[in-house]
Image (cartoon, rainbow, N blue to C red; front, side):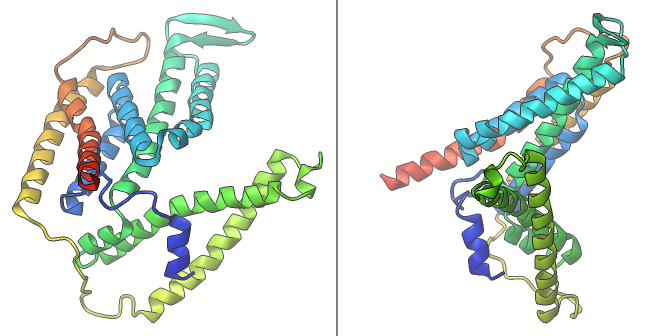
Length: 304
């Protein structure tokens, strides 16, 4: 696939100037996005999970548009509800009984735990999408290409292929449903999903052969040390921003560790109260949103 075709598939979802930390070195955006992704994965406490989910959802809405983000809630909220119900049915732990459904006893604690884990999964998915919009694969290659080329290449390819595969999957389904045969009653939704998955797999395998040949033709891993063209210069303000992010991340990590260690679902959940330890993480989660809003305000001012 040529670079022109790839650009045509990706489109211009996120402008270079309309994304968080666009005026800084890409390392700042990468550090902020990675920190928030780690908090989304490991800060398993209801308040932190809610803060992570809300901030990821708001940032996704501003980045990709509210209609597009809200459209995904149809299956995302269903996933959270499914995880909550499955955990409540098959892991009936806790002391608070909500109801009894035949052989199943639904406990409040099990239901809450399943809902929280579903929210964690949804938050991680949103932050992965946001991180891929905050830092492009080319910028990852520039920052890590000379020091960790294999890791940088893997991250860059993954950042490109995950959204590309989702677009191709929906494109294959749309083409199949547009045919006359797809409207027949025998063409069930499951059959359409299986067919689209098979075509997508074949498409990815074909692309992988071409990508491997292209890397081999360009002399991948042939030299002693790779060189990389740097389009961004690292300034003193970038170092200050990274130090500030590290300090805010540490100030958020210590209270988060205390909150996670003290929280438990079984046998009963403690009462949630407002605590000063949530404030540093609220500031950290709001940084990308505030930066994006600031960049867009500057852009609109320049347009005038």
